[in-house]
Image 1: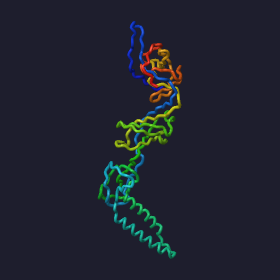
Image 2: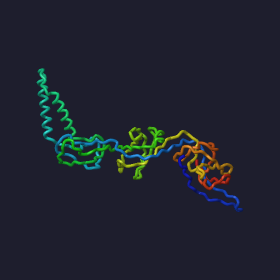
Image 3: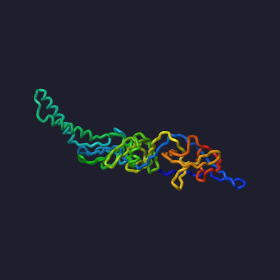
Image 4: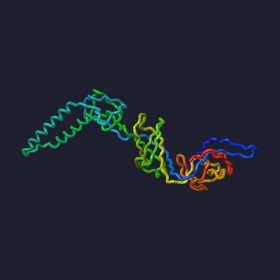
Length: 316
């Protein structure tokens, strides 16, 4: 059984009668009722990059355009880099002319050998030239920059990365018992080390050699750090159950739990078996408690069985 949070003592001042024999305890009360409560699951996850693109020079040449630094934010479609290679341009134009000439001859019924290999070579060179003027594939952040304008680069050289800016992923692992109870779509709260708390939802499950992982999307905000460890709180609604505020439940030294009902101005000690513990309420599985019973909310640590009480306030 999870630890029961003991109530904070508020407005507890014993009142003595004039003859010194009677003590009346003021207290706040609530009502036992059926409520939809939420079971809370907590764990620690890690911020991951949702997607990224590593840019490698598609050909050897001179970088004639690259005005960015690490951490710069760019929008989808922004021109990021331009690499110029005069020899590649000349080769491309030569292949275009050569293929056109071969196609003219083919109209007479003669297809010169090497036509298809030249077409394949042209397509490959066209793609290289396209990538040499590379535009951002998504809204992103430039990182791992190892290039500068006017630098001469070699084909295949890694120049920079762009990571998806709008969404990050929190990868969460839970203990096997709790993991079985989590379903896609449950609401969650992600707490960052900076103090920022973001609402999210369990979006997907992922099976890996290290076990089951849950993935939760997080919208970008300034200060989010890939690789950061975060606390994740998942709330799972439980069907309507008889419950009382968690503050009403007292844990005794004997390991048993009890509450105090109020009847005819007296506090009645009632043992209970608690069930699901939510944010603010706890289920009562067993015990002489019925819906509508008045239950002491504040001050129950000072009470005993059949002690007189004065109700100051009822909080529903």
